[in-house]
Amino acid sequence: MKLDGQKAFITGAGQGIGEAIALKLAEYGCDVAINDVSKENAEEARGKIQAMGRRAITLLGDVADFPEAEKMVKQAVDQLGGMDILVNNAGISPKKEGRKPKIYEIEEQEWDRVMAVNLKGVFNFSKAALAFMIPKKKGRIVNIASITGKTGNSGPVGVHYVASKAGVIGMTKAMAYDVAEFGITVNAVAPGVIDSPLRKMSTPEVNEALRRAIPLGRFGTPEEVADGVLFLVSDFAKYITGETLDVTGGWGMD
Image (cartoon, rainbow, N blue to C red; front, side):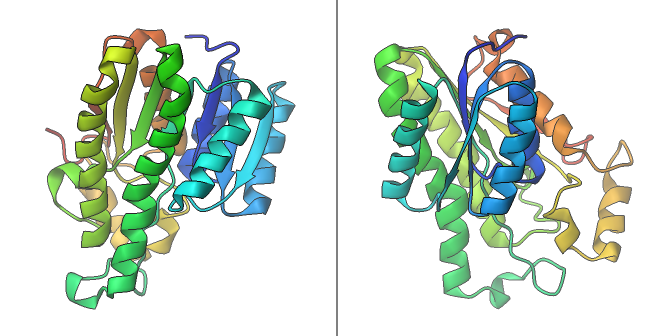
């Protein structure tokens, strides 16, 4: 499953699932562009990748801003020499006192910000990356969704997060149709409850209730989500497009 010499761009890659994806793709041969809003986190991730003998660059910026996204993708292409893989991972999930906010507690500005990051960010970077993938007739796009976007059971996250991730799943299918003629695949990974920095925003009581609901009896790890991404960008998945791979320990299984 080697990806030697391929160039990957991961949004929100400074910590948690995004960092795990960046490290996994570097382990299998990719040079990596790391996007994050935190310079400290991005630089730390870059150092880990460079220690593996791979090239890595950091690109700080807001995924919700299309001109910024376009600029960052062009910088990645210029500095790394191409764009083979895009992983749209950046996302936010606001909490209210460690629990999910109910719809009647969500302000319009919070709704708009979640949609801008979680959904529009996927559009922004996909459109920018496809400008380089389409002429080559080659590329892999993986969008990080959520099992809540399929089940409608919001679990520990608010309705704005659920709606945004359902949108990501729908967008994944539509994008896959749009770019199939160019040999580009578009898939999604839908994590369940993952032991990541976002999980620490919930209260211990919420987390324990979630753990008991998972058939495998534990939270997933960021590395296990990264394994799903690795599969989808590899040649083992070259005839798979428009699909959503659940990484949930059985929680919310189809």
